[in-house]
Length: 371
Ligand SMILES: [Zn+2]
Picture (cartoon, rainbow, N blue to C red):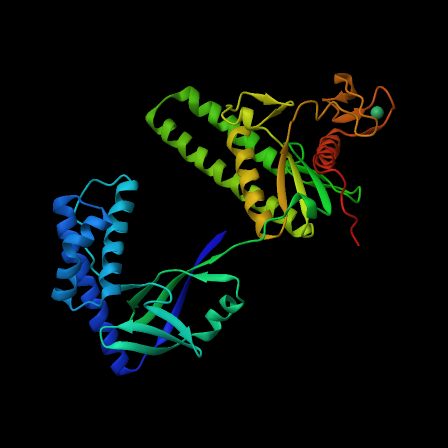
C-alpha cells in the first residue's frame, strides 16, 4: 500500500471564494474552541467529546452535522500526533483557515468538478485537471482531504492510497540472487545465468578514508574532535544511503515484473558494530544492509517484484554447480572460488549470488518459463 498526498489547485469564482472563506474560518474557530476544552480536560475520547460538544459546536458555529464530526476528529488527531511525537501537553492552536473533508460526504467528484460541502450548501468547483488525471484510473482511493487557502489560491490536499498487487510466489518468473559485499557492493545472478556486478569500489575507498580519519579523531578526544566525528558519521551515512538508493533502483529497473530477489538474512548481525566481520567483509552490516533490504523491498513491491531472505550459512563455501561445501573452496585473499570436488571456479562474489539464486529456486520450486 502506498499513500501520496495530491495537492490540487481549485479554481473558484468570487462568490465561491466567499463561501469557502466563511466555511474554513468557521471550521478553524470551531477547532480552536474545541482545542481549549481538550487542553483543559485532557479528554481525547471521541464518544465522550461527542456527548459533550457536538451540540454546542453545531449551535455556536452553525456547523452541519458532518462538519462538527470532522472538527472533533481533526482536533483529536492533532493532539494525538503531538503526544506521539513526544511533545509536552500544550494548547494547540489552529492559525490558518482550513477544513477537513470526508470523501463522498463533504466532497466528491462529479462531471469533472469537485462537489464540496460548505455552510452555504454544495459548491461545484473546477480544478487543475492535469495534476489530477493520473488518479482517475480506478486504483486510487480518496482519503479525507484538507481545503487549504495559501498564497491567495485554494487547494485540496487529498491523501491518495493505492493497493499494490503483491507478487505471489506462484507468479515468479525470474530469480535474482543478490550478494552484498564491499568488493562489489552487489553481485547478482539471474535465471538467465547472467551475472552483474554493481561496482562498490568507490564506496569502499571512501569508507576506508572515513575510517582512517575517524581513528585519528577518536584518539584526539577533544570536544572539537568529537563534533567532527559526529559530522563524519552523518556524512558517511548519507553517502551509503545514496549508494543504496542507486543500486536498489538499478536492480528493480533492470529486471521484469515477477522477479524474486534473494538476499542473505544478515539480521542476526544487525546490531553488529563495524568491528564484526561478516564473511571477511568489514561493514557496519547492521544498518547498511538493513537499509538496502528495506529499500529493495519497497521498490520491488511497487514494481510487481518480491524480496526474500535466505539463510546465509555456507553461502560463500558452497559450490553452486555440485553443492560441495568446503571452506577451502574459497580463497578469500584472491577473491576466487575453486571447488575442491568438481573444480568449478569463478570469482567469489559471483558464487554468493549463484548460491542465493539456487536458494530462491529451492524455496519456490520451479520457475515459470519466461517468454
Ligand atoms: Zn563443485
